[in-house]
Amino acid sequence: MEIDPRQATVDEMYRLLTTLITPRPIGWVSTRSVDGVDNLAPYSFYMGVIEANPPVVMVSTERRPDGSPKDSARNVLDTEAFGLNLVTTDLVEAMDRTSDAVGAHKDEFDLAGLDRRDATTVDVPLVAAAKATMECTLYDTMEVGDHIVIFGRIEHVIVDDELVTDGKIDVEKVDTVGRLTGSYYAKLERFQVDRPWQ
Ligand SMILES: Cc1cc2nc3c(=O)[nH]c(=O)nc-3n(C[C@H](O)[C@H](O)[C@H](O)COP(=O)(O)O)c2cc1C
Image 1 (cartoon, rainbow, N blue to C red):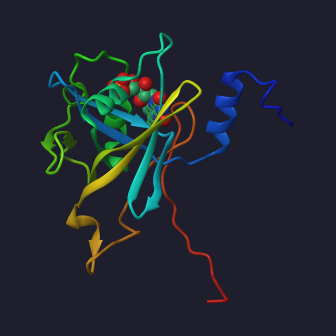
Image 2 (cartoon, rainbow, N blue to C red):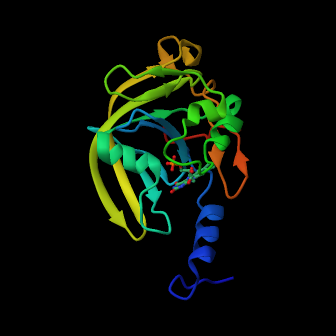
Image 3 (spheres, rainbow, N blue to C red):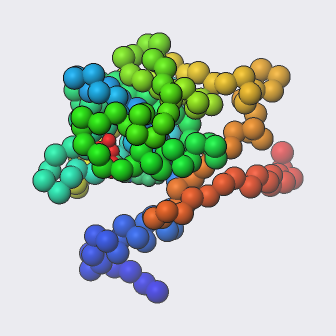
């Protein structure tokens, strides 16, 4: 099979990219609107590490068919702040529930039955049950096609002690979930590769 992106439809390219570029980390983005409505939505066009110094993440949000930003993007553009909540296997159903398009007036924490707590450095809600959260300020934005790409600078990180061994975050304990395509998700199966040269 060969594909020429210039001949393929948008749907074909979307399907191709979301089945081949896998598993994708999920940025579970929490924001607060200027009217005080809390919002939560998952984004897998998400690069959790752009640079470590300064620590910057990237979330790509599609514009709606009428050209308006999704609620998460609207809130980030208005308030210049957002939270990222780690999606682990125990939270995957709740995370999926928050992908429903419910309108800006609806509180998506309530919708998914999730408790929240306030972030410490920015005015955003965080998922109380998330095993790690990152608090971000708006670093930059970029337009790519129909997407508003949001870059966020990480201002504060909270990690549950449950994920820590001997003072370090333990790769064996972080059960993150990756997105494939449609309703498919992937769990971690860890293994190490021998590095004879080291
Ligand atoms: C796992 C998952 C990943 C998603 N990734 C993206 C994404 O990267 N970009 C995007 O625009 N929408 C993505 N969506 C769809 C949004 O979550 C959905 O449009 C949501 O309603 C947006 O909510 P908001 O308007 O409150 O921001 C994803 C949905 C799921 C379930």
